[in-house]
Picture 1 (cartoon, rainbow, N blue to C red):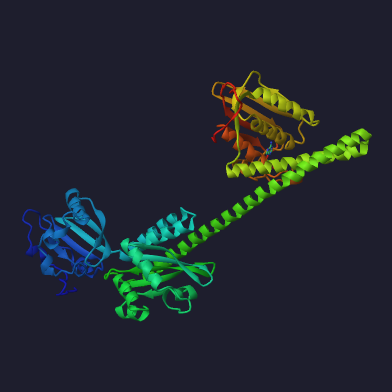
Picture 2 (cartoon, rainbow, N blue to C red):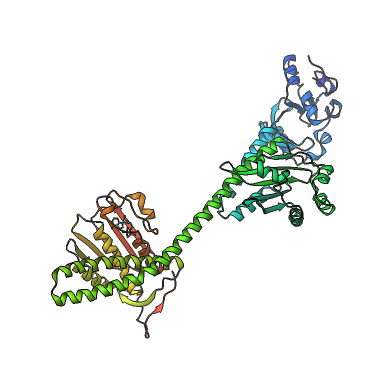
Length: 560
Ligand code: ADP
């Protein structure tokens, strides 16, 4: 049997030394069991019902840093006076009382490590096994921390905000202060985020960087990381190191006042290119970075790099969208004038051809006029889209009968149609308040889509309904319909359902976007039901408002 005089070894004579006269005698485990306990790498502690230690194995003594004499026969709170309210003691008491095994994790401060304690009821007391789970626990904590960090990083697409989030999450978890530098232009390094446990020191950290800017010509520290893409690791920062790396006495004093003890600088890498670096600095004399910390910092940096890249890509795409919008705005304004002139000149030519009875010219001019109308309606739609984007689509407000307005539009549309019959269902006045022309545009658009997307059908249905709350307009066709997957994006700007027949259905995907905006601005909503090959039904719901027409005409309507 293994005996270890320093740590106490196995204590076969304990029962004799500490008789428990209130209980039945404690059976002494067989020698082989005791030997096994003695050789355990886990700590093993036995207590009697009076909370006195009656057996401790060598690993247990090593772990607690106590000797056999300091523990055996002593009450647990005499040996560890500070643990009265600690989870381990509370759990031990519960096991004693209930007789049910339990386990509890503890962070043992004197050795700064995590343990799991499994406590079992045994005859005449409890047995407690203590296993060191420090590495596993730290790994778990790191993974949870990285998961939290990733969540935080993905919550913003603003680069500056992402950088601040990275710096802030690192403090105090990994560092007492954290700085992020990015290469913002060739050879240009900018300090874009700093966080410090002591917010007052942020300013000192910034000042230190100003006094001692990164010099890419002198590849040490941060500059080296930026140039090589390799991390720099300083487990221990000595005063000599500060003396040898600072430029002048003032900078040295500043560096000293920040009390660096340990540091690591890890690169931010996107697609093999170093875009910047994160510096983690500890200023607590107890804290010295380990290779495990460096791993963790690199892991955090790789997630941060991804988040930074995402924010950058987002900013670039926003910029591209803004450029496109500016171009559309300029182009639609520029196109408007020549299209209007073309229309005027065509009409002049048409009148002249009519006078001359020139059938051939009239036919060509008729076709030309039709194309100019199409061009004009595209330009008008483009201008509307621009107005929607810039928030300048103005609406007038007047009370009118939707039913009457729909009848008028249906008559005009029907007069130009030979392929479809438009049937209107629903009688009676339907009073609404809003912009008559804009709501007319909604009806025209839905009708022309219904006709355009039902080439094999011969009718379109318009239904009008209303009660005190709402007025409903439905436009139903029996055409090609729309696959379900497209419905959620159908009203998006420039969204088109691409079908193999695309050529048959020209368009730019602006109509429904404009329709939706007009309907929303009137406090209404727009819905669609559709099945491929069966047809589509678009439903506009507007609030019913029985407003009297205001003297003096229409007023502008507030956005919905
Ligand atoms: P456009 O018709 O100019 O492409 P819209 O914004 O009016 O633009 O319509 C967007 C898309 O919705 C169209 O490209 C088309 O695929 C689909 N769509 C609209 N109305 C209908 C309809 N009545 N039947 C089938 N598809 C339709």
